[in-house]
Image 1 (cartoon, rainbow, N blue to C red):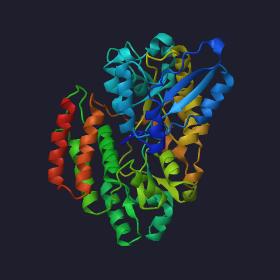
Image 2: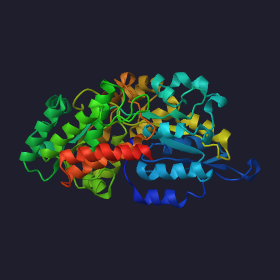
Image 3: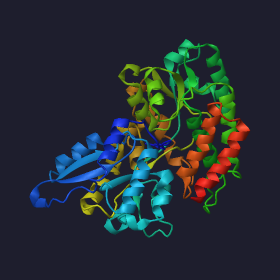
Image 4: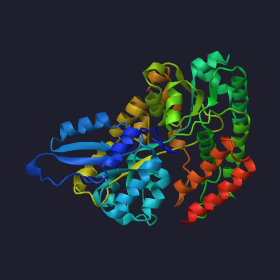
Length: 436
């Protein structure tokens, strides 16, 4: 969903965010006993998790439960500070809270804030998740399971067929995939597109492309990005970070970016106004695109292979805070939402790629097509290689560091800093963020 910034990352919906913040004081369901009628379970999310129909199904079979979701569509950078505040205060959080993978390490540092799902039968569910996804949810000593996995990121490149046709480029997804086996090829195609003066930029934002390249490079090499597995900050010493930065500078220098700040109102409007032709596209991004571009763009989008070699961007977990007044009921709902059936339902609704091997093998996933994206075979595009995805380790202040590095990329994109100055800012500000 996302990452989301990331899932994660997800589309900004200011109205939804306002609702999330405005109801923050409620949190934790209600004080009703079973004799008073249904209890309310509050689920806090960011972005688009695709749970609406699953909620309805669950409530139909559990008439004693009412489910309320908060934060749908909200930006991760808005969501996570509120969650941190609620956990620190001991009140305000939902009965179930979504945690993005880049922030999981921070929350695992305070496991006392969460119910240990291993004490509630979760160990029996280990085989329902990719092994590395299950392990991510465990504390370092393996004695506590903070959350159950929802999705993984799987990478592709979404593109506008109509804009490609306008620029005289191929529109068939296989032909488009062959245009850019590498990121340098992607830049060359972008330059061809730019020369045709279609009125649209080649890509939405340099930061999204940067993050895609970084996670791809890190997954195929060291297995970590901003922090090594010893939790040492390595922004300035990890070749994957500098490589991704330099490639992104080439993209900026070629004038290919629309410069729409990811998750901003301008970014959302740019989808509707057909202002860019390509966007780095983890599985969960398909739901974001459809939500932002609207029904009028159905059939104008398609999905091709991402330049380079694979990659994984995004993925989240569902956790139950100890402050929940309905822990037992919340745990059962979290198990349902993260079951193979739940993950298949979420994929069908909004596109987040399951982290369940059973779901990934199900014909409902493998044979699935997405009508909005020109009947693209999303199951084959995203699910086929999901079991071999290589996770990237996220350190204790990953999100804060990532924000500073991407802010530096953004200043270069906007012409406020040179690439050299931007890199210096990225390193220095990342160090400051990690030290807080």
